[in-house]
Amino acid sequence: MKTLKDLGIKAALSSVLTILTVFAALSVLLFAGCAENLPTSDETGKLSEESEAKGDSVAKTYKKYFTLSFDDGTTEDEKMIELLKKYGIKASFCINTGLMDGNDVIEVAGSWKRMSFDYAKENKVYEGFDVISHGYRHKELTFLSDDEIISEIKNDSEKIRELTGFSPVGFAYPGGTAYYNGYITDVLSSSTGVRFARDTNDTFSFYLPENFMAWSPTCSILDNKLFSVAEKFINAEATEDMLFYVWDHPWAITAYNAWDKVEKLFKMLAERDDIVFVSNTEFYDLFSADIPSEPVL
Image (cartoon, rainbow, N blue to C red; front, side):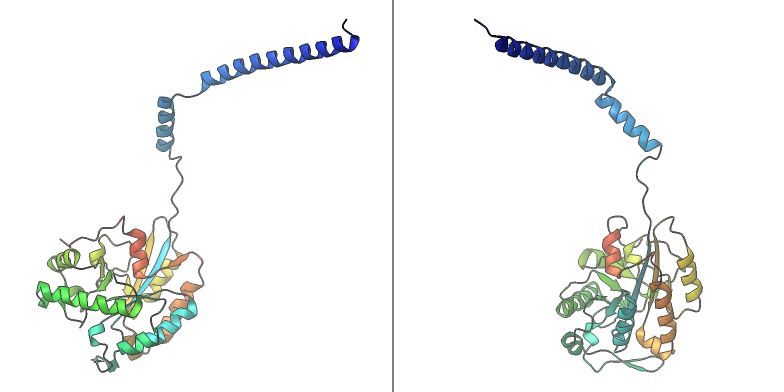
């Protein structure tokens, strides 16, 4: 005989089952209604194309880059490095390791001694800075055979690796723009590890290079237009990626009493928070996929 307690439990279970059944039915109906409104894979593709056409993709953030390079590897490099460290600015040093025996002297507007390779290595002079080739013995490449060109790069690169632990991919043409051509860049591209090379053809602009094997700088640090160009760069809004590339010779800065000018430039730039300081090699690494390293036609 069933008790009142048994009947109560049975009734309660029946109510629960009824509620669950109703809930399940409602869920099926709701899902079916939603599914009818979901886009198909074809429709999803069309929506994506429409979104791109309307410019709904994430906008690119453009940057203002600043880079430096200094040639010849003279003892003035130490003074330049001290100043660069003071303002937290990066630079590339273009050296001729075949002339760094401690005796070679540059005779231009004075006498300027190249740094000793052993001294640079023992004292880690260039530690933390980019070091690239300027030719083993600073020979103008247009006067050399293919094998001599390759030797100038290979020998310098091996010594730079010994000095820094890194094989350079950068080069600064000895003598500048007048001493290279399409044939030279073909030899460099095909037979050496050089992937970017700077000339001395100042552009006074902030455009990115079109070809890394013919990389023209903005201006030299001793140019009279330096500060007007620098102010233009500082005040510009980056509507595209911009590059301010300054170059020169530290010995020339001493020769022409321009160290105050150099420090003024560094201070101006270091006070900005919208400028990205990079070495030549770092800039190459950032844009190597977008800018070709090809023989100059």
